[in-house]
Image (cartoon, rainbow, N blue to C red; front, side, top):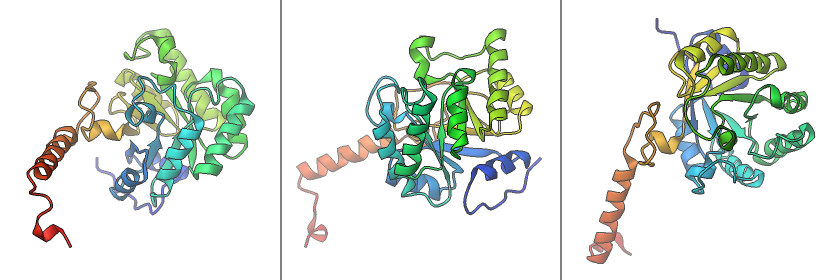
Length: 272
């Protein structure tokens, strides 16, 4: 059944909850700089995630762990300056919230004040409950993140699908309900079985955004560099590439090099 799409001039946390209740799917993509964020926002994406995945795609690190709070604020402020419609959610980086709720609050406040972001996202459930509550009590919207949590990659030891076993699946459902209860406005579920993700989405009233979590959730998120085909080395099952920018860009740049070397560029009409 098709659902009439409401025209939101500005997406808020309330808009997302309303979209879920109306059966409208939520679109979410990452962005890390002004130019890309401008394009993503103009194209009509509902939520822009300034992800700690910037550690991988922007800085070339193997994991998300090295990126700092200062670097996340830099990326987030660049994105916020470009956005007119989308809700901007900013990842709290590894080490900025896990050890102490007071530190978590300080980190979240810095992101909100210095970047202008609209919400923060934290990885984990019951184990970081007090940090989330502290941030929420300060009036800062929080999005949760369960399933595969990349900041815990050395604990997991692999990027394989999570919560395939009953015990971990039950904990994930409990954590999702807990995040809803304490006041999170939404949850990202990463790389878990589709049936489990749908069960979670149907058991809570806040939006569930999936990445590698099937189509039974309330929305989808991808890393912009992956879905545009700028990264040709990453090919998980859940990724759909909408462009092949890696080959298109290398071809264009190669043509530019050839034109410069052959003195074809600039021509008479391209100079003063």
